[in-house]
Length: 72
Image (cartoon, rainbow, N blue to C red; front, side, top):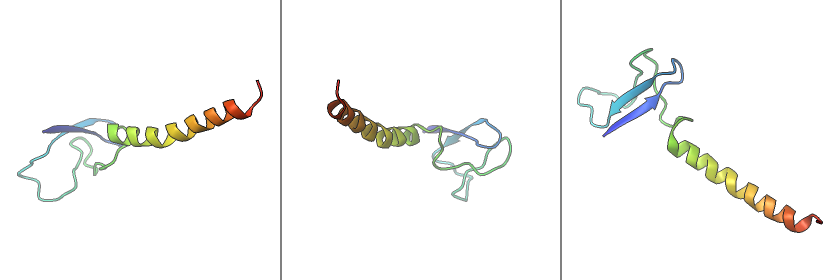
């Protein structure tokens, strides 16, 4: 499976394969600048989905309470 990871330092996309035979270490390195790529990145879909889940429900509940509490 091919995965793309965005580099924080040089702002490039890096494609990675899950089964890399030549990589002996667990950390992945950017092909362009040589910096270590993050495991959990703000551009990743799982990170954005997790942040949305924790931000959406409190705002939703607050809006419902304010619609009931505030006079019309």
